[in-house]
Length: 239
Image 1 (cartoon, rainbow, N blue to C red):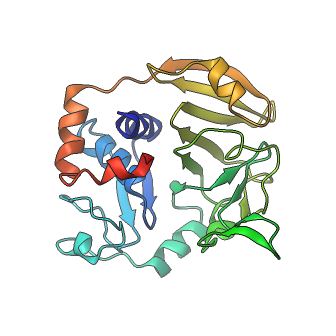
Image 2: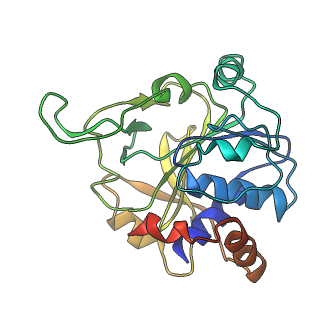
């Protein structure tokens, strides 16, 4: 039930009137976004890397870039999306970095040194461009531990450090929000199996207790997520 709770947490972060972009290989953000729109009736408009404009009916596939997602919808191109971002007219973007640090730096490039990395990752695409411009940035990571949340990332692919946007991180242990007034990460969501001390001990920098609430998944949530993901691809996200 980890993915279902993370999707519900995303759905609760999204707000009426927002334009929401779901990127490549982003099954979790897709689940959370459509859950918010279709089950909780939030008035959001969902765009995607498949260049579909707010598709009404989807089935989750291994890639959220599947062109079939745009089969019965208007097309909204990636070039137009970048134009929206630059004009400040796209509200929400998702990103799944391998590392996130205390200064809102994100790494999707390498583990280890850039010259001789232990692991070379897919790379940033538009990460550096979009992170500081988007109004609300929702990061996610399925493994909340000190390696994923170090004091300093191995490589800064992109950053929201110098921005004024809202930044959230959704993990398997809860949700963190960056409090810009206090310049610190705060825990704002827990799940039935997690607690504040567990999050603190699994984070490589100081995190603080915010206004915490608990996310619980309902049968209605589960039924809808199963409908979106009949092949249970979400199960492979946490293995």
